[in-house]
Picture 1 (tube, rainbow, N blue to C red):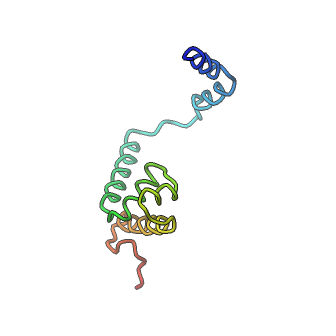
Picture 2: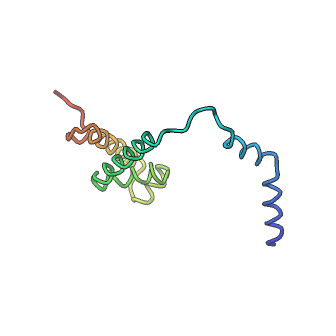
Picture 3: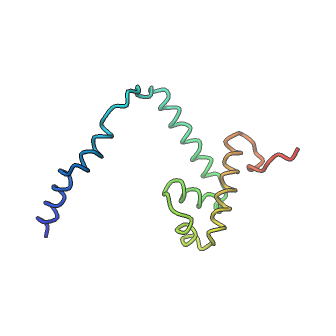
Length: 115
């Protein structure tokens, strides 16, 4: 059985499909690589975002982490947390609004300014 699985894997890697998919990523697109400074700032911004996510209340933080980091569907998140899919969607929306407000430096918890 092992030999059959091994040979099947080798044949798949030799196939034209595999070579086309692999080669597309290896072809340079003519753009220069990002500078070390821009990579640093991109990383620093990502760290700030995740720090802000961890500062959210738990009921908003959990769906955001499961959706954005683990790429779970609404249904999967709903089943895990024991809530309805609509509740997951509303918590994601409210959590994103709170996160956007915090990232802008506003402490109004992402609520629209009525004034």
